[in-house]
Image (cartoon, rainbow, N blue to C red; front, top):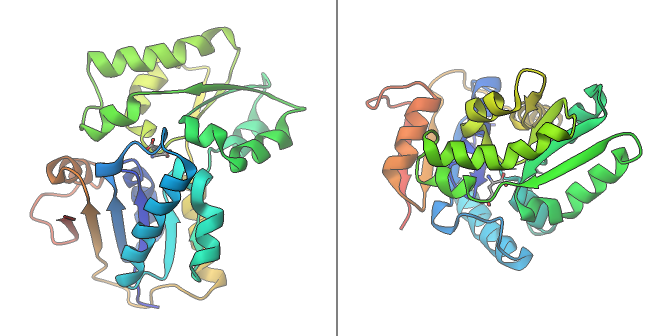
Length: 266
Ligand code: DGL
């Protein structure tokens, strides 16, 4: 079926998921919406996030998307259940990758970095309840990292200080897995990894969500049939140059490529 897959996030975070989706599904067209004007979603109320998701999904459906990936843990926590009742196409949500960490931990201690909105959500509470008898989850809200990423800043003193502030507490928790429960945090992977050290495996949700998307495409017979000229279009409600730089770097493409098109929403 030659219709695009819609992907969105509160900003540029979900591009880390789009990268994995684009690589696992090389024939698919994608439309990505970065709602940077409204980032961060973390401190917003459930009702506000539901309204924002509703508008974005309508925007993506107008562009004929066949499936939606909410590439944002916070938006998933607040809105995925409601969105599935409002829209009659498959909607895939994203949640912190606690399961693989719980299944593989040897110390029984897992660190989780996410927004307050994600930790508040039923999704997270339900998943963590399942493992609570077997592992200890050490939760940490990483305030400020989303805002920094939205400015296009991924390295430097401010980023280092924030990462240190949020990962230092794990040093006394005996964690061997750290789950990045926000799609903006992989931009700080190197800093995070350096801070937690070689004994801690740092995981995110991009790979499992791409696998899940492939599965849903197969089950619903939604694969794109054309084999070439796939197109990725990125819309942003924020600063177009920041999105441009991130996309070019992440996808390793030059600025004149027609493979990826970036547009600004007024
Ligand atoms: N990328 C979003 C997430 O995965 C960021 C949340 C925010 O905007 O606060 O949760």
